Length: 61
Image (cartoon, rainbow, N blue to C red; front, side, top):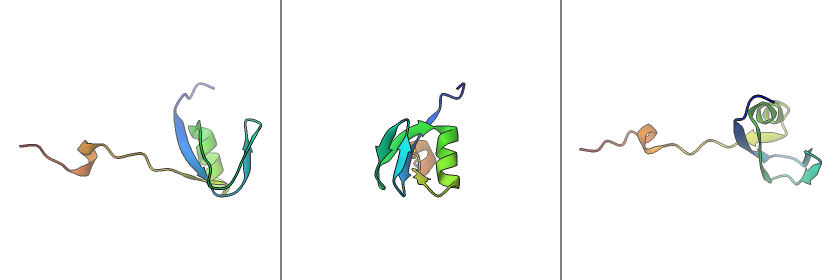
């Protein structure tokens, strides 16, 4: 797979990923395409990335 970006997903129901069974509520790290598939099929919820200080509107004077 050429896409090396990974995303954390919180499973909303039990799921087997890469041969490992995970319970609902587990947080797994998967390739971006897998994360989108899990969310689209109602199996997981993509965790929002942590905002950077720059994105919070904080200014330094």
